[in-house]
Structures are given as structure tokens and as C-alpha cells.
Image (cartoon, rainbow, N blue to C red):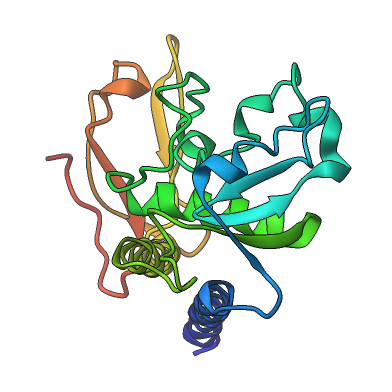
Length: 226
């Protein structure tokens, strides 16, 4: 009973965390008083060079003043390519070429969208939000576009997938394994777990272990390798 209660508490906390993040996303997308609306050409002026009016970057259409991190974003710095534009895609791909420094994230996976959400949290916490870019993610009225709504949906699904993965990890915790030329392969489960089913070549390296998992079973009995 204690084990089930612990599992329920763990999953409950994961679900609560997902709900908090979802609520935070809704707050980020909602209009704020005093923000600016910039067109991409105007944002491009904010690269932090001599005579430029400031140093901005955008992520998922949200513009941040990164002047306090100038050494990272000013001309010639490692992340200077992010300045003066929305390069959301590059935050995930690491492609800092002109072709990669773009805002198209339509083909990113759920987990990659979560990476973007983590970056968004970082900028919300460490830099000043100053406005939004009119274009892919926000319209001329400052409201989210259908594409931003799709991004939000992907982030929510990524959070749900993480919760399910946590449940699976609790149900089927990682097994322990080692291999040596003298002893061959050896596998053992975490405490209170029993081997349910496995398929291995005893004299082969661990890479030849084709199927192995541990699970809690009250009716467990030793089985032959299959």
C-alpha cells in the first residue's frame, strides 16, 4: 500500500507540475500592458552594435532585452546570431547558420518543444520582456496566431508524455547489467523487482541483450530465456 501511495504521490506531483507549466504558458501568451509590437525589420536594428538602439532577441515571438548579457549576444560574441531576430529553431537544433537561425518550429517534436519551453522560462526569469514580433506567432493585434496555439498544444502534449514516461519508469525501473569476457553477461533487478522476461546471449557483449525489463509481479516464477 505504501508503494502504491508513493507512486500516486509521484505521479500527482508530475501532473501538478505539468498543470503549473501549462498555466504559465497561458500567462505568457496573454497580452501584457505596456509591451511593444515590432515588425521583424525593426527588431533587426537591435543587434547591440555601435549606433544600435539596443540589444534584443526574440523567442517564439516574445522579445527580450538581453543588454545585461551583452557579452553573450553582442556582435562577435558566440550567440550574436540570436540578436535582432527570432531564431527559435536554433535554440533546439544548434544550427547557427543563416538558414538555421529562423523561427520555423513547425516540424519539431514534442520533446524539442519542451526544450523551447525551458528556454522561454530562462528568458522570462533572467531578462526583461519588452514586446512581441508581428509575424509567425503574433498578429498585428498582439494576440497569438494559430501557429502559436499549435506550439502551445505540442508543449502540453510533451508534458503529458513526460508524465507517462515517469509512470512507466516507476513501473519498469532500469535493470542493472554488466559484462566481462571471463564471466559473460550478468543482469539483476532493482530491489523488490523480479525478472519477468528477457532474451540474451550469455557469452555476448551487452549490446546483444535484445529484451530485458524488470517489473513488480506478485505471481512471478522463474522463466527460461526466450
